[in-house]
Image (cartoon, rainbow, N blue to C red):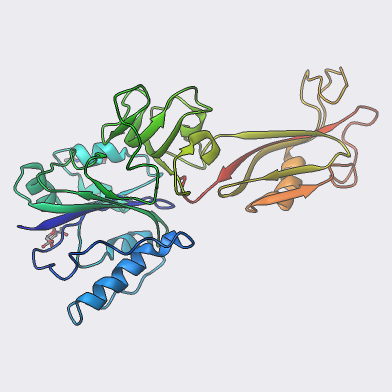
Length: 353
Ligand SMILES: *[C@@H]1O[C@H](CO)[C@@H](O)[C@H](O)[C@H]1NC(C)=O
Ligand SMILES: *[C@@H]1O[C@H](CO)[C@@H](O)[C@H](O)[C@H]1NC(C)=O
């Protein structure tokens, strides 16, 4: 297995972690990869592939047809790289555990996870001469982000470091300080206590201000931005879709957002990332609140019809706006009382599942 390079692909909407190895004959793509096009970062891999085809005429097999099915999509990787591991988000199995376990359980494959055990064990035992490791983050069939590491002399954990990083979508990662200060983490083990693996993080303050580039959140969580919900079971994979680190809370993975406006005032919500997923709504009053200048601790309104109405206006959209009124909600659920609309929603993004 001389001269092999490994790939890690993490699919996101169906988040997948793929590792592959490249054959030693791969001599025709020795130069640096093309610069990512900042306007079109997700197409970078296509540019790379175009470059490979240009430099290796006739060598490359036709690309297998991409299908909608996440299992096949993620498996149809480039022949220049060998799949070692693929991990899918939201399946209730820790990606870290699947990556580190000695005994791969093929029952994982029902959820589209993959591990090539012969490559994995060889790598683990230092018998796989890995040249490069590629970690790709997928959203469905689309590569959203890709990291390439120098894999020479690495083992299954040690390839994932800043010093081995060759390229990433994030301009500020290569020079970011990882000096051991709290919150500066770049490792597969990550932050065990907080349940964050495959973790590239820059800063800890509070949950609201933590910043980083990549996190695979498992069952154990300590911040709302990690928390699994019924709609988004663990593990969830968060990463910056910009060209630099993000405040995790802004990714708004599974963080429930809340908006309240008084009746007849404009209501609007928007997601910077992803689309609106309305979880709960009430046009009326919650128990014991003093919102909208009214002290009445009298609950009223119907969450079911409120939710239906708000979902009709907002569900699945990047933004929505309307005036919450008796007309809009088809009647007055609490005559005399001043009402408001309160909506709990998620920004549900394909990079967070
Ligand atoms: C594999 O996983 C299944 C389902 O979790 C479990 O029932 C089975 O015992 C496991 N097999 C091994 C060999 O660990
Ligand atoms: C694992 O990778 C090797 C080398 O690419 C390949 O020959 C083998 O078929 C793969 N095994 C599985 C189960 O995919």
